[in-house]
Length: 235
Image 1 (cartoon, rainbow, N blue to C red):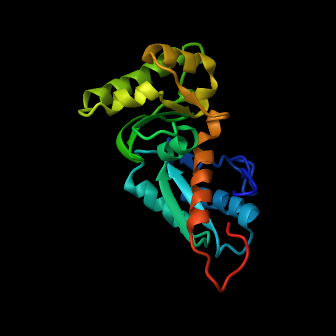
Image 2: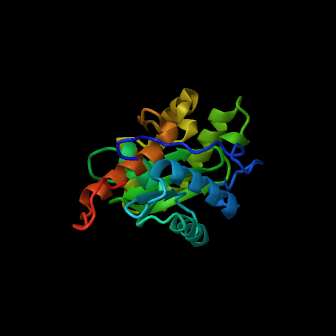
């Protein structure tokens, strides 16, 4: 939140309802009821009861389907906010850790349950690949090589379909690495060697997406008009 930084909700499973609340798995909402409870607790802590002047930015896996996005929008609409801004996690990561100069950007997001590679051109998704496995699925001893092979296979596939040299340009600038996998130097060093280029890392790669979403939120709040009949700080 602008001015307050990251606000964390209760760890899944520790809420008042108990149980193993893991409403999002493999990047999809699998338990809307539990997801609504978690979002509600975070909204209570961050926004309080009056949410009429608030804006929420929702980021989702780049290849999330329409059903997932619709379910997420419905849950957020139930929080009573004024506006919801929806964007892919790759766009959020690029906003926070991507190169400042114009041109194509390659984002590699290595999470606990998903691995994604996204090519952004002009801020829009030009191509993307997703593997439904992540850090939690891999043997720590072989993680760098297996994860590296997964990422390289996806980039190679995108290269074969790239007719305009965007992948080459993005690699020249260095791909943005995000997610928990980017916290491991053995993973990042392996990728840099295999790709023959530098890689771009945020200070805390595991929160690159949420911090990028926060930057976009701040931009939305700065540029939206303030209704003359209301006062107070937008949230």
